[in-house]
Length: 628
Image: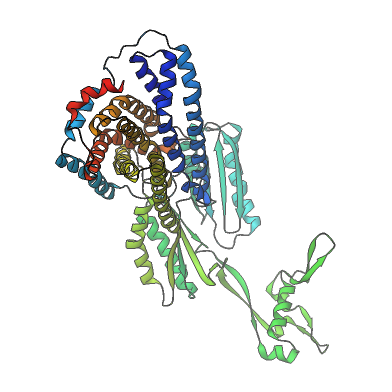
């Protein structure tokens, strides 16, 4: 819309009637607008093939932007010309700066009028940005911490607590403490809450009526609601939108595997304490808990007595299961449902009563269970977790919000994993998973998608301009925008912590679709003027004179539109803060330096091909009247 209206106004200033200006002005820019629209949509095509959480977020974003851009060009070439032709007054408009920006155009042409100057600008604006991107690239992260205006608290109970004891001593007290806030007797008032408890642990969550007081609720939940329970660990934090119960999308898992249970639990507990020391404020959990040993009853078979009774170990195992939770015999299908068939004996409350349970042997004798097995009580793990068929304890750590995932992984690799590996027994294994794996995978995928987007852009430009050279000129403006995006991120980092997360990465792809539009407008207008018989210098001068106003206006609208989101985002838009900073920095820097890079590239490449050149900007003053 800016390009169409700018061209209509320019022609109106040149003396055309409103209808003539609307028709001619729209007709002149339609090819360039279609090219820029197609490229803007095309750069998002690789994003649509992403999967998992990232694909869902990016696909929605890409689809929304693509539809908006497609509809905008329809309005720009239909509604806008009709409105301009009918609403603009017939009197001649006067421009305060003539036909475009001649003074600035002349200066740019003088700065790029020799081969050394052209090579200097190209080296400075292509090589230096790539080097700056490598040096100043922010640390990588996975997904931004998206809060959901709720406080979640996680419990680890002492071993041996039965469900009845958990409900009576933990659950009832939690309800009692939450009720005054639920009724509004204490502030902040709660909207709702839930409690989910089980032997060994639990979680509770609560929402406030006034979401601006979520920080107060976190303090109350941490210092009041979850305190005072003997031998119980509790951790309260604001809930994450990306992530499940007990972890966020940024959580890193460290799998410790060993057949030596005691050594495994000891190293896991030392690892948990080490992680809490290295990452203050981080949420560190062990699964299963290293101190969750509980009293268990062990059945030790007496093989000689079992053989005398006419059984084997498998048969005795079935008998013990029958006397306990029950032995599974099979299923019964009633025509609609499958029902399990469980054989279960009468419940026996003590180990002594279980040992006296009478059993009938195959030869008809009756012997107590204690004759074929020995029952012992011992301490054992409340939960056994296996990964790849090996006993495993997993340490899960959510890095602090002010630490990027890349820095956290580097600290783990250098200062945590070597310490734990040295303490594990022989034959043990240790490896990282969770966001550590996902970050490496998605970063490689995003790099491939960015390269694919550039390839799609290059091929489209080559087809539209019917020139590989012009397509290359457009694509070579991308490095300047990349360094602009990084400058925007670094500037934002001075006032708020902002790593290079995945949503910020998508901002670079969006920015490519935006900044190439400026190059398309200039290259397209330059080639049109050359086809009309003008020299290259005259054509570049016309293109810059006639397109600078639209380029500057679109740059300002893009930058000023994204600036509020980067500087002062709302609660729902804070995840797009880095994306907005990339767009602001990219469009501004690319607009400034592309005005020097594009003329240098076009003039240098034309010299290689032996095209005639009219000399310099001195002929530009005569080119403007001829274009009119």
